[in-house]
Structures are given as structure tokens and as C-alpha cells.
Image (tube, rainbow, N blue to C red):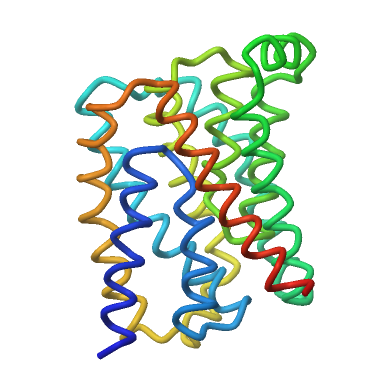
Amino acid sequence: MTALILALVAGAVVGLALGGLGGGGSMLAVPALVYLLGFTPATATTASLVIVAATSLTGLLAHARAGRVRWRTGALFAAAGLPAAAAAGALSVHLPGALLTGAFAVLAALAAWRMLAPRAVRERSAAGAGRASATGAGLGAVTGLLGVGGGFLAVPALVSVLAFTMAEAVGTSLLVITANSLAALLPRLGSTAAIDWSVAAPFTGAAILGAWDGKRLADRLNGPTLQRAFAIALLGVAALMLVTTFL
């Protein structure tokens, strides 16, 4: 019963993050599955992809109805990452859990720093950034390797590299996350039998419901507020994972 309650609460938080912030759900899902629900890092990353794919699709539909998805750019961005996501997903099963967890935490901290950077810093960085396809390929590799949807990196990239508004970045990020999560999940389908579905299924259901609430939350908050909330949440998760992994 305790595991079920924890799964429902954690799932609701993940759904709120994805629906409201356009990312960060898997950054919360993986630690919750590992530290609260006893999943191994490998199983947690696979379960996270299932949870995030289903929840992101729900959030995408909600934001699309509000006209916040830039379909063409999002599709190009996602397509560039699909081969990298599939290849990295196959590689990840051969890497030690501690390495995956540490890399996960470092990337979260870097993404948070980028979101909190002064506007002038982001604009200078954007001027020398690569094209959307290169960024999309990099996000795909991260998705496959670490079992994340990529939204925690896609949102900063869409804002600073492609000059999306925060609202557009949130909606379009969910398109990228859905595509990347499904591509990264394909080479892991054989390992889904190891997932404890009595925990993962209610986790997913709560996350899907939470995504709708997250979209309504995004309606009430302005872009800078969402950006700061996103970054602060990522910093907290990164610090927790670094401490538990290396100390």
C-alpha cells in the first residue's frame, strides 16, 4: 500500500512537471523510481521512458489545443534525434548504473544553469549555437542513454537556440519528448518484463492526470516564472542525485 501511495504521489508530480514545464518529468521519475520505489537504475530508466512517453503525449494534446505547438520545427528537431536515441538506448544497457546516475545529475545541473543565466548570456550563446538538427541529435542521444525524454534540455534549447517563447517551447518540447522516448524505448522492449507494473501502472496513470493539471498551471504563470521554477527543480534533483551517488 505504501508503494502504491508513493507511486501515485510521484506520478502526479511528474505529470505536473511535464504538463506545466514541458520537461523535467523524467528527471523526477528516475530518482523517484530508484530511491522511493526500489527500482534498479536500468529498470528505472526503462520504466521512465514508458511513463514519460504516455504522459508527454497527453500534455502535447493539451498544449496543441491551446495553439502552443510549432509542429514543423518540432518535428524536424525530433526527427534529428531519433537515430541517436535508438543507438544510445541500445548502448545504455551495458553501462554501470552509477555512471548513468552521475551523468544524469551533471546534465540536469548544466541545463538548470542555462535556464537561470542572464538573458544576455543566453543570447550570446544562441548566436554561436548549431542548427536545430545538431541540437536535436544531441538530445536524442541523451534520451536513449539516460532514459529521459530530453525536455529538460529541449526547453532551454528551443528558447535560447531557436528563439521560441517559453509557452511555445513548453508545448513543442512535448512533441520532441514523445518522439524521443518512443525511439529510445524500442531497443529496450525486451527488458520491460522486469518492470514491476503494479507500481509503474498507477505511477503512469497519476502522471497522465497530472499533465492536464500542469497545463492549467502553465496557463496561470508567465514565461520567466516557469523558467525559474523549471531550473530550481532541476538543481534540487541534480544535487540529490550527486550526493547519493558519490557520497
